[in-house]
Length: 225
Image 1 (cartoon, rainbow, N blue to C red):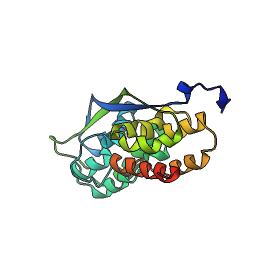
Image 2 (cartoon, helix red, strand yellow):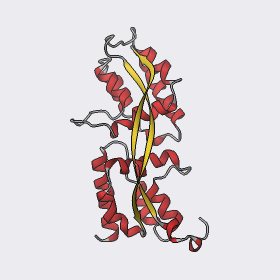
Image 3 (cartoon, one colour):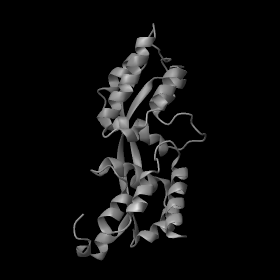
Image 4 (cartoon, rainbow, N blue to C red):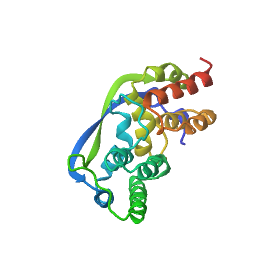
């Protein structure tokens, strides 16, 4: 951990960032399940990231049954409810990197192909478009000096800020932890119990508004606010 007493005030501060997930067309598309499986294995890893996590930042006017784009296309593009269910239960947080995640998606697709006599296909006007993501980061100029400040600041964060600090951080940080736990562990002592509670908050199978509310409840409860 290092000598915490050597950190200056700026190094101890939590810098609140915001972000946008820019969607970039890859030019790749799939019209049937075989093509989807083949392209999943070769597409840019940023595309795997986008199709699992990007939906959290895109505007939605309903409560989708599935939380990744592969499952949604399986249901509405291929009309394959069984495949959609199998793809829909894949939890990206269980995989240490995007290549392992892509292999799991391809495995589920291959298993389904082995079960079917004909390759499920979509209409020509409804292919699966592979999109990759690039994250754009903004400094909000907001700084938190002490851990108890999280109880007041997190409720005011934008959902995209919550995404950046609690979800995207797991891709950025070597220990695959969120920015809150990293800050507590690197800059302060005695918050191991709070970090353990944060580690049990699942980031994927709910919307960002609900995730922000859950984090708010954790911090307010812990700090008695």
